[in-house]
Length: 506
Image (tube, rainbow, N blue to C red):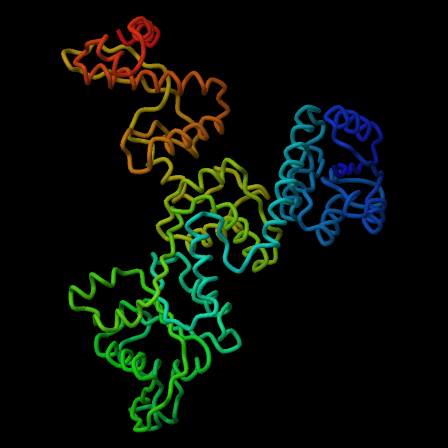
């Protein structure tokens, strides 16, 4: 493992940190001023370079903030922890703005300092693994089985010129698939031209697609080539094809049938040497039944159909995509890329993403601007994510011990409300059985919320809740007959009697 570099002119600080970190099997290397660090960086190899840099903010011969800036130029992904006195809080803010991982106020509690450094080490190692994956990643990202099916289809179509129809919800990345199909086709050296048929007014769409001759209509001062001619020898991507006006569908069908078209106002046929890829978020079969889309055009376009999964169907890809978009946003804004904690990532992956990958990209841009620290925590997530998590679980009262009710015949037992959880998660409660997101997802998110709240009785609390609800449901089903309920649950008569007593369900 690479060493933790410690920079401080105070020998006692260096000694204490060195000994504490060595006890944790974390190697160290110490420096007395920033000049020594910068000189060591010049000769450091990949193996003996720093895993983490821990630097004082005020030292003879240089400032920790200046060192931070210079180190980030050389190693932008290196976590840097700045040590600062309580009187230097303004400097701490500047440290965060400069891309510091965290700041450590002096005098510090040694176990907390070691814990912070270990957290930075874990984050650094995770980032290294992620960078390796990203370096090998293609232009489209996805490890989920549904995305692997898409990649395999692109591979099978790589030598084909066949027309392809891409279906999927808005924001799921249909244009990226079209670009990949073009890039890996025999037409890769030709142009890729995209047009959103829903974004162009009906009166202008015909001219956009097929071009026009000079004088074809008022304002047509010169001949203009349309998208079909612009895509000559390449690929034309028709996005949101389901919104194309009916009369233009007829013209498009003619082009696909005989390979010729006429410019608006023109009399000479123009040959179209173009591969067409279409995309839609609509159910075109239904549009055909309703009379809004030509059936013959549908069959012309629907030679090969690729369905692109929604982001909620590929939640395992959220981390890879989030990291990619955080890096992309940071590059656009000229700032240090932010990292996202495991807890925040888990909550983010439980979000339904109605806007799909495009919405995740927007969220990452928002986090790059709005998150106060370099590591994004659950409380930093945007309101729509936190509100969604809260809404997901608020149907049932929070977890805690169940108070025995004295129901009348067939009555239900009511839980006693618990102390509220932190504001970022409130209100958080058990997911009701049969909820759309599944009770396992509810249990997972609830456990994450309790972990983030610092609770230390989570096993007992969740187990108690689970057993109480299970026994209550069985007793309701058997109209209070315990032996029958025990048989249906697969437990013994003595077990259900003991559990009813332990859980105050008498």
